[in-house]
Image (cartoon, rainbow, N blue to C red; front, side):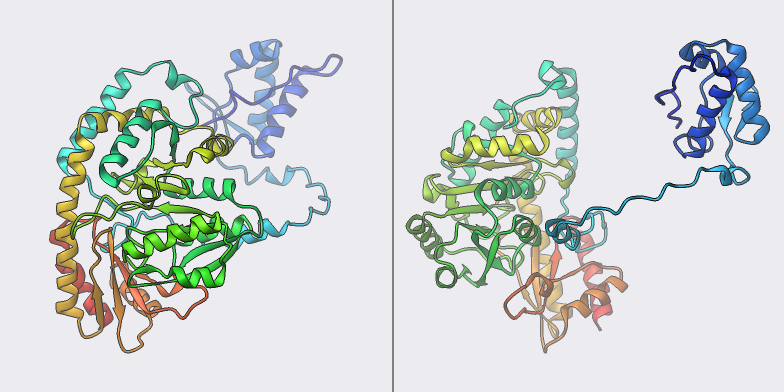
Length: 482
């Protein structure tokens, strides 16, 4: 690719040799690296017209560049920057001494030191955050895309509502009322780029530096990073078999401003917050005047009994900011999620979302809306729930059969991964490295603890690959850990 067509060429100045000025401009762009080796230069005719000079002047300037090795001519194709500038790069002008850079602010250092997860493109068995579209969903998605492209309207060519498409927000509200017992109307729904985007918006809107917050321990690292970046005072609240231990949070930070929780399928342990704990958490929030951010990231996939009502539905929508995602329900590359805001927060969250990246893709929203309206979304969820349950059960059974001597397997009631705890004090970090060397991906959960004694365990995803691949994958894991 050549950028010569958009380079800001300047017309020659009066009173100075035209050929030399054209030569200096082109040579300067090549030496500076703006025009890359192999890039095409403008034709002499077009370049002359653009500069307002005689074509002969441009041809003469090009002849100088050719003679000095900056350019090469290709018969029938044009003039190009030389692919080998080794003989002329010493002509690059010396770099001026730079002034002392400004001091790096502490917040920038905090962000720079964060250990963020690598892109989850790992196709290997047991990697997490992966989904599968079956043939029916794939075909339906293609039809929805084609319909959306055929019906492009003015809203797709300009700025739109930062809250999201009104029809899609209404469809999401209908879905949440039916599936999660949500109490919401379309004007409370905010379309985001995913659950983490929604959490980040909530952090920006609800917290000031130094505000105390509750966060589950162990917990989702991206939420911790968002809170750290905002300067929040994070209080780690332990998670046990019943979920967040609310009493410990009340003892540690009774006046916390916000509690960040994953009640349906706690990340990473996979436990479900019991009804008693849910009511205890809501009562604390009412008494303390606090908000709750409910990240319901995998609520669609519950395999053992009906899902418990969402905190947002139990509360009536007064103090719970509900977060959901379509990326887990469909596929991560979709980059679409949503938040349901209590009415006093709805306008502020929409403004914060607009400041961050203005709006979600209108075309993507149109495709999802068509997919939902045609009934494909609900049908896809039903099929995936059956398939994922079978994958969860087979993975748990294979792990117990082959690795029961070293792993204690905890099959979750829902979600997209399970936890296998290591016995006899074995290091999950070492096991993670052994599995990686053996060609499978597991994640050590000990690194997700910050302030309490970690438990050694491995996180294994079971949703991103065919069920028939699981036995062979467990065999490889067993060989690696042996």
